[in-house]
Image (cartoon, rainbow, N blue to C red; front, top):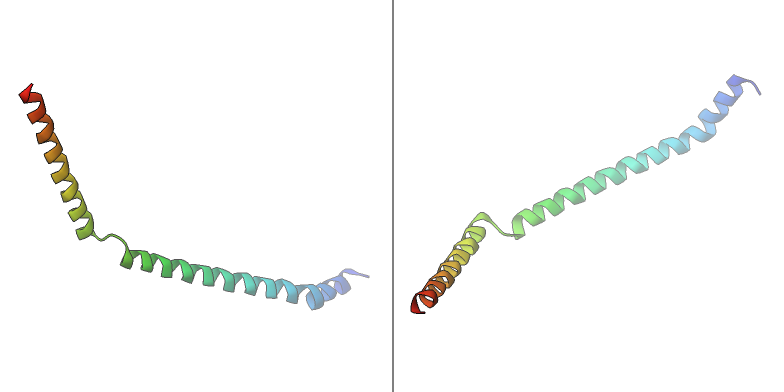
Length: 78
């Protein structure tokens, strides 16, 4: 078997499988990328928005202020 026959054998029998494998991997990567984009969109739509976060932090600040006032009143009464 010389080099030309080896090359022809590879081109006929091996290369189509390599090509099919690469097509499969490309399609799998595209599917994964699409799923990731859909998940990012889902998270962006359904999780905390800026208004929700501001409302949550404002409530936290109010509770914090109330506890500090209680602490200062407790300290001043003794």
